[in-house]
Image 1 (tube, one colour):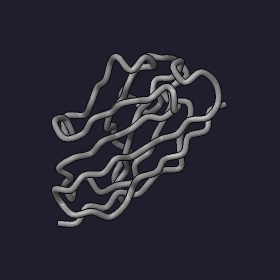
Image 2 (tube, rainbow, N blue to C red):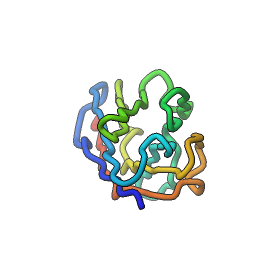
Image 3 (spheres, rainbow, N blue to C red):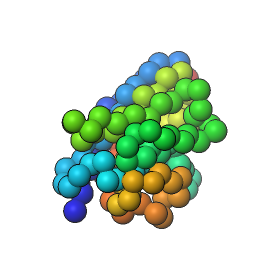
Image 4 (cartoon, one colour):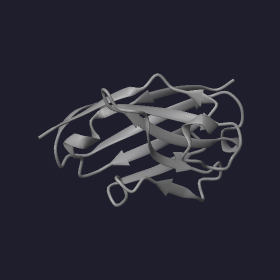
Length: 124
C-alpha cells in the first residue's frame, strides 16, 4: 500500500507561483511512476503531469507546458509540481497519484493510489 499526502495549495493571484508537494509512504518510491491530475468544478479530471520512477522522463499536458515542472526527490519520497505563471483556468483541486510500475502515463485509470487533493485557486 502507498499513502499519498498533498500539500502546498492555496489562493494566489494570476501570474504567481506555487509548489505542490506529494509525500509518499510505503514501499520503494522509485518503483512508482507518479502523476498530477486536477479537477475543476463541473469538469472532468484532467491530466497535468507525470514522471517516471527514476525521474528521468517527464510528460506534461500542453496546457501547462512551459509553466509547470514535475520533479521527484527519492530521498524524501516526494514528488513536486512547480507551477509558475498561474492563470485563473488553473483553478482546481490537484491530486497526486502513484502507479505501481515505474513507467509514466497520462491516463488516470492506470494509477493505483491517490491522494486526498489540494485546492489551488487563482484569482484574476
